[in-house]
Length: 184
Image 1 (tube, rainbow, N blue to C red):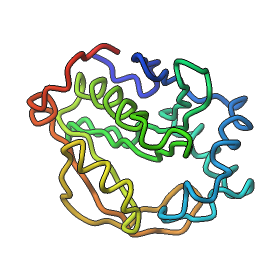
Image 2 (cartoon, rainbow, N blue to C red):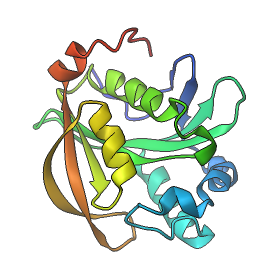
Image 3 (cartoon, rainbow, N blue to C red):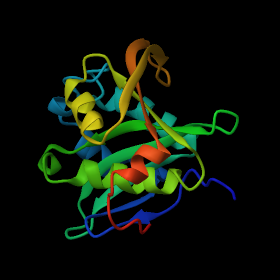
């Protein structure tokens, strides 16, 4: 079975579709909020020229998504699959950001659920790299049941190396948590 790094995924709350070049302006509108990035290793990503680099890396990754709210069609944010490793039977989920108007409303959990459910058809481990000072994302990841397994310097696309925590969710643990319906 082939692991497509850019499937279209959906549930009752969100739709996750492959990112395209023409999505830049509507995604930047969400990303241009400095508060989204305040705990992120690159706090300047709300600036157009910095986000342009981020967006270019997202397109070149061939694993990036734009996320829409199903009820309103509004852009929620973005995420991606990257570093698929057949030998280690793993893939990384990351570069996720969610617009503040969707914080605390279940959109991030719904996004991770869709992505993890899909990934676990192909791999046994989902890895997440989270900035060492991104406490909000660390807490959200831990709520999903992922465990911190290490620390790592990560070179984001065209950006300086930043210190990250490495989290891992294992397929067996994900499945035992009874997350209900697994449609995608």
